[in-house]
Length: 334
Image 1 (cartoon, rainbow, N blue to C red):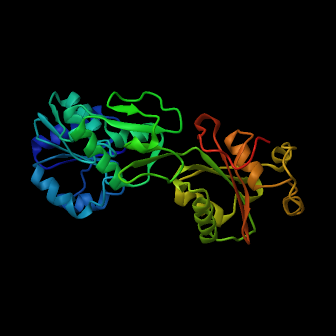
Image 2: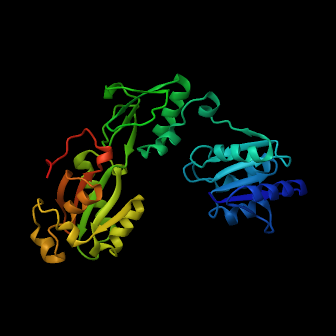
């Protein structure tokens, strides 16, 4: 975490120096200008800002820069004696709550944390989901579920994968329709349920040279809709190594935040039980691209979805063995 420290008064600057010396990856912002100008200059360069100043000054300075809690940096506000360390913005996702506790330990002060889940001792669903590698289909639904947990004290969860270290206020249920939270690659849900997706699917893809990102997006949308699964459940994109410089493919992966992995034709051709694609064999010397790369990327022998074809693209999917869904795969074990 890259941390910037801002102070206004002489006492505040002394405290800022002491914190910067003891806090890893912390930098003093000593450049000239008004507080608001400093925030504007450095907003994109740091993950957290420690503001030793009145809360009102900090609030007025950062207000024009705030976007949403998933992207805003953590903001702390301290008095110049370090007695009160206030987690002001991005308490959970931005890490402000945790940072407030760390800074309070350095100053001998009190971390002031006002998020309801922390105050009442409930699970912070956003942090728990992140730790489990799960992605929420809707941020609004995540907020509503978090509020229900605070108000009701517990929620029921239905999971198609093994969930480790389930918190005491989340209770597993075997009945999908009765669940408040669904952990699944599927997009199917009842009204009011929160969908959390494990990033367990591996997308294998082949393409003709020069295929633009937009064509990949259109193919993926069609594929996911036909399988009633979410693209948020994909964690990796794999292809043959001859495509590791394919601009459209790389832009496609980057836009979704996927890992990429590329395999040689020798690695692909070891999968002798797969049906050979004459087109792939002629073009790249491999028995195929989409299906074998999906299997190699998932370290799995079973395809979740066999090869689908578009004009310039092929796609197939496999699911990582550590997070296998109960949803039946389209193909049998190869």
